[in-house]
Length: 123
Length: 108
Image (cartoon, rainbow over all chains, first blue to last red; front, side):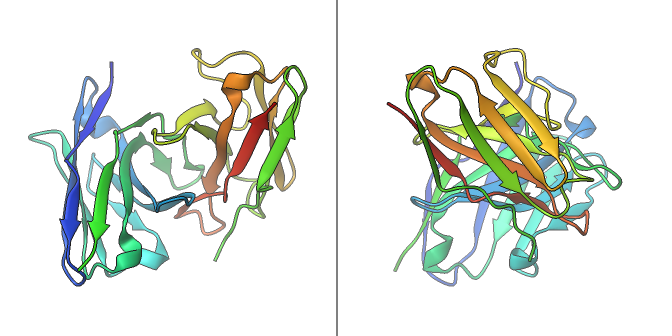
């Protein structure tokens, strides 16, 4: 059974950075990409970006351009999302999810999700 | 920026049909996928590629698309179908994913 296991909850000060990890198992990691999605308290889902685990290509939502970096480590089947210059409204649950993208068709479904990581930004 | 528009809420009685719409300019050329989210849990895909249903999802869930509107239909809604539903697709640039604002479904 495909599994995505995320790192634990974190509390950060405004202006700091956070890195969330997402360890994949039971599938060929490099055959899929990983999208990162966040959900602020009481709000909807927000797509942050996508990374190909095959070649490291990324697409970031314009809102996060310059502030987010997504990477993968194929030796450990782990994806990472780093968000910098944190503000209070970055407080959210951050999810990783497995998904494929192709330039002609666009994004396919996100079929498996991690359990979510709560990041709290507070002074 | 590109948006997918959903109604904020839909309410039906048990056994009735619930329809949730999602409109977006790029939908004629891009797949729509639908997610169910129950409070505090990760979303679960209920329809993918406009109308395909994962094997674990009950047959009462179906999807369709016409022009700029995709629709998720729950035929004979059950109390356990209550939750938030989100459509997900690709924007008109083809580079970015986007979620609709979500629809809260109440079955009572």
